[in-house]
Image (cartoon, rainbow, N blue to C red; front, side):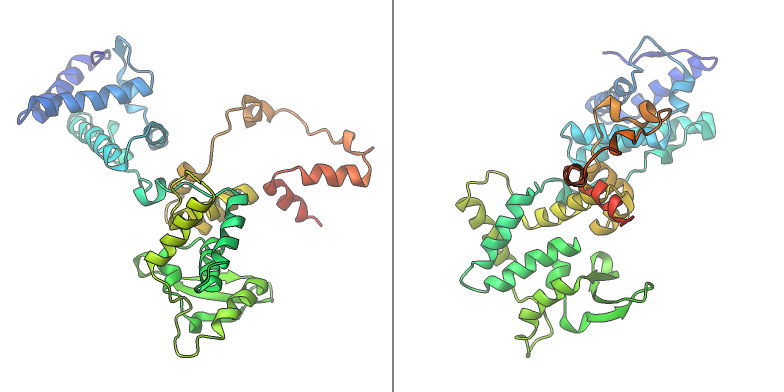
Length: 337
């Protein structure tokens, strides 16, 4: 499909500039010009602009949020991060080129998007049942079974990366007083980029960790396990239970972040659990769009919530309804108990 004509008071100039852009990019190779045209065509098709005439405002009206939607489409279509980067770079260069004549009407910085890294996209998650089974499998290992179990559980509880958990030390686990006045166990960890973070854990989980902390008198390191050993645990688990998914160590973190979203429905808490600097990573990877139109807020905004049907329920019926709710709804209900 050919690039559409652009119809506007500045049609001739705009069309001329776009053709100049393609020619400029194709000086070294006609294939390069062809690639840029394909990227532009894909972009126009996505925004339903692949028609005979495109108004100038159709292009200048595109905002950063529209680019995020476009990127999500590219990711869901199976494009690798490197491919998406190339497409965004090409479209950004077009915007820069057009900005020379049209100024701020074409802001190239709307194309600056933080992409989900490959390490965060190619790791299938455990189901709840699979992960419980996996923890038991790790604990049953003849050598360092308890330590392997606690390593993977720590990975899940904290949502940290593999290396951050391996680098944990005993002297960085201390009790601190929370703003609520409660004393909590907190692990100070060094994560990506050398940044330190304080991760609170429950008394129950600290009790589990204490089982291996007591035996490490000569070392401050909590876990003395190497990558090869950890990968072998997952590999052996997949073989024993005939699991086709290519589960990895990072799958544990992915499972933790997804579970946080399922339980809370809170994007901020989910971002914190995943230790993502940019919330757009959390949104694109973990927050799924609901395809049921009746669940969209525009359908519900003018409707009042009718609770009359709850008045005649017995206690048992009400409890049964709550038990069938999502974890996020249960958490919200418990706030009022």
